[in-house]
Length: 151
Length: 289
Image (tube, rainbow over all chains, first blue to last red; front, side, top):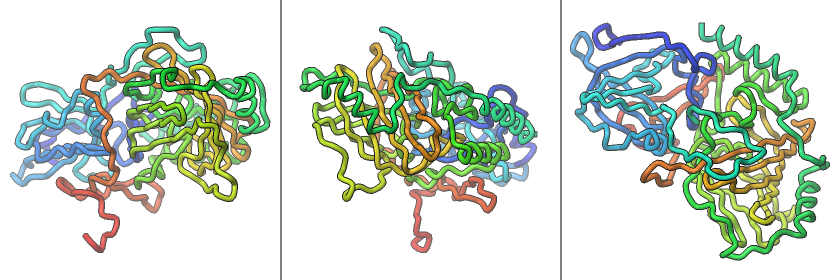
């Protein structure tokens, strides 16, 4: 982690403060900092569109011109797809700015929060996908009302 | 800082936990799940004899209704506040679990790719598909290609001398009009979900599944687990139709990317191995690597 390559480190507030991390597919997200974010500019090395988690790997150039591969973890393909992120959206060589919640132990990886492509398109793997239909017929008497937010 | 804040959140949750009233109880109390299931079957006069043309239409791709997260009971106020009426030992275990989570110490048994098991199966936040046949229904969860088979051909449970614990148990059922009533036994112990209470290998359930409107399927679930629950726990799970254009359920191989391999630290926390880009599949036998 260097001054030049790190665009910003911020303390995130809000809804995640108590819970810490978004729901994660198959393991606890406790290895990531729940409140800090890190934003890095880099070049896509590989987009591993896999279950149970996907990994976006970018190569970041450090102050001393060495490079570091940073990994950003998200959910698996169907969750990404529901958030509008397809395998072909991030190809090796693409320039991208990625924000995530860094690992507590300082290794170069983070939970992926968003990525901004060179053309300005924002890819948010953990945005709340509005991809379920509203109930259009009789409401059940026993079920709770659907709440907004991510599942 | 985060530990302090988390501890405060958990503390508040535990206060509420101690005074919570359960979300609901069956209209009638039964001594166990078998008695409950048999009573429903008698009320349904043995169940509706259903043919292919009379099966309800549950086609489509579904997922747990939005906004529930990992809460087992969608009606509970937060992840930490269970609506289960737990036996004292399980109250203590749950409290200790929440305290560990608040310190960042958490390990999920499915981290090494074992299936979640039922009844936790109800809560996994991924895609689902329901395949209905007159004699059998398949309740399919995308995650680890996990299928529950519900036999509706009139057979009973697996005989005792053939039975052994199963991830998703042994499920039989019948149709009551357009509702599918299910009895599940022969389960393994587990946890209802991360930060949720534990259940034992004596857990059994009675479910009533039905479609409510065009875009929701509801499962009313009553859970019996005498060692862990002081009274049956009734929850209502709900699944919404997924409308993403082009969405498909695909094979889910949990070991396909070694960057997803994690291990449990000495403190009991979860940590990544993280070999880096292009790691390939997880190789459990390290000597072969």
